[in-house]
Length: 330
Image (cartoon, rainbow, N blue to C red; front, side):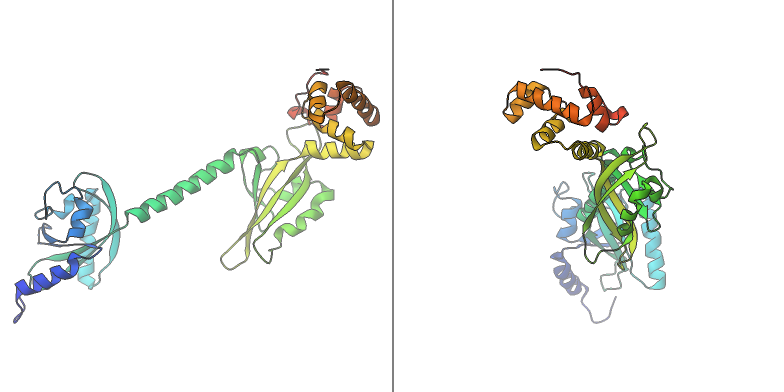
């Protein structure tokens, strides 16, 4: 006991100081039993006041800890801190009187005040912060799940152009550990130069390439999509993220249009044919007669050198992706 200091007056002043604190405070004796606590700690541990006002007096601190091993590590940390005269803060998973979990940063100091108790303990609740971290981690897991299940082809490259990640949609074309350029048609490799140039500002570039296919009889397919540069904190390039889509049908259809010299109306009908619409459907969509559609289809066949819809579709749709509709007149 400190000479010349009234312990009761000291206690009142200290309690007045921490009573309105946003942190939970308590004093414990040598057996870790709570002797005094403020209302904030009461709200944190027994919000329903199931034990009445000042409900935590007499409760042993170990009852607050969710896991027994957490309390053992807590006491060992306290002993270490007191030995080296430091005051560290550690986050623990705790539990309320009703069993509900909560999180708090806990720090302990030896009570050398005239109150003659053992330890003063401060609890700073971090439950919301912890839940936020969990949501962020969950979001990362969700993002990873999405990357693996979207129809788009997701490919990530390192700074050397090596493939470091592909989602299942991209596995039919690309393999992790191979050079991205090796999959690209030689005449399109010059378009890859800008992939590794860091832009002056955050922007998404575009890329259109032809690639070789491993699971189709065709030699190539067209891919088109977005390029995003992955930067380190110092602004240097860490890698490249590609979001690609198979646009082979569209690219081949455009080539048919260009090579055959189709009119605008014939081009409209060609795209509708590729989507599987019947003559009657096309007539309804374009607002012309069904005989008018048949006339244009006949001209398309003549200009492209085919004799049926199936043959026309085979020019644009890869065989393994094709399910050609019959030559229906309706």
